[in-house]
Image (cartoon, helix red, strand yellow):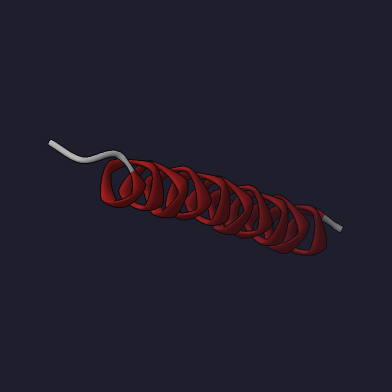
Length: 40
């Protein structure tokens, strides 16, 4: 029981980290595009 709970917590943490990474990557990509579009 405890082992399963630990694995589920680990899975949730991994999913959250992946979601955060995707959001950060998307924001960085959008910022790069904005800088590219604007001259200077």
